Length: 425
Ligand code: GLV
Ligand code: MN
Ligand code: MN
Image (tube, rainbow, N blue to C red; front, side, top):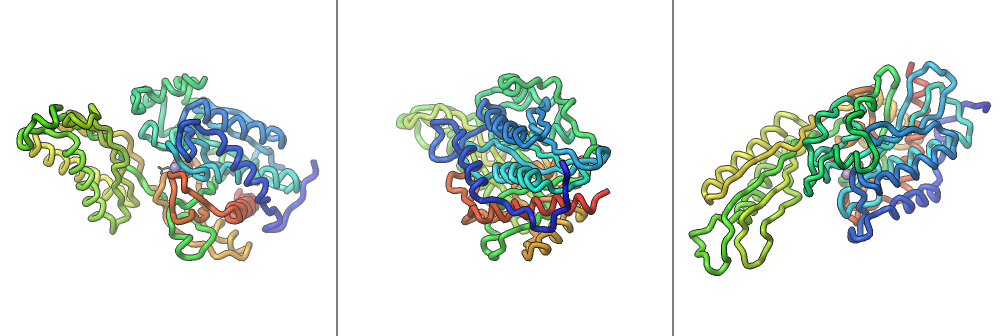
């Protein structure tokens, strides 16, 4: 096919096509999940969503493949067969009862970009590679960004049997269950010589853009996370028969730990550190039995690794002290650790310049959430574009982003990829 150069902004995303894709993915959800979307990492529903992406991209003439980690890659060749690829994409898994935009926006934007490039026969020298990463959410296995970590060589076959979900299913078992071969994930590792740059479009999952009235953000750093589970062993006993002073109440200890984590987070907040206990399981879970056991999942995020690790250590120390006072045994198990990542100026400057080309003033801001781009940056320079999240809400069914902003973000993404194509060797 003959291709032609396109002017900045000539590829204008179609909001109705984007809406149709968002609706299609939102329909792929566990039926009993509640009002939100539940499409967890390494489940058949996640694979079904990847298949929708693959079929769409094949229809556009892209060469599509799935790697051993379950990442799906679709490629449109450039005019220079020896040039490295410029990539974009995000993820299609969700948290339990989550929203319909987190990750999905970056995938539908990639699909729409591929459609615009092919429909306009837009010339590009580098191959354009559209990627859906598997298992980005850490909600199931504790570790975020499993597919992109495997691509970046940060997670290998030996790491997969040890990470388990709340039902005891390991990452390796879940992968096998959806037809992947965890022993072969080394084959999914990306070669940096094969890549020129990567850009991920995502919802902000915070309220900075909305509160400043800006419609596009350019990310300069992505927060890291230190995650752990704290298991408590108290003494289960009759809630009426056991006097208050003779208890070893695991639920009361858990409650105290939640507040300790909050106070550590509040103290460390000035350095961009945030501490959350997002899940507590209490056993035996009976109204008339003092809790004999409890587990807490703790997520500490930071833009400064030292502060992030110190805050996590402080939570563990203060939890141990509170438990000792209560006669409750306390064990902390590390689940995952990712350092914060500054994103390189080489891509960021192009994203800002593209916004200016399109008459937009972006806000440059850090990301509090984790993203696949953080892992990809190990292999090739990565950048991120944000679009606003209504009321800053995410990981919740109320997650919402104006369709005009999804379309605008996609237009900026497409123009950014073509601008990078002109700038990069
Ligand atoms: C990914 O969504 C995260 O938890 O940051
Ligand atoms: Mn996401
Ligand atoms: Mn998420």
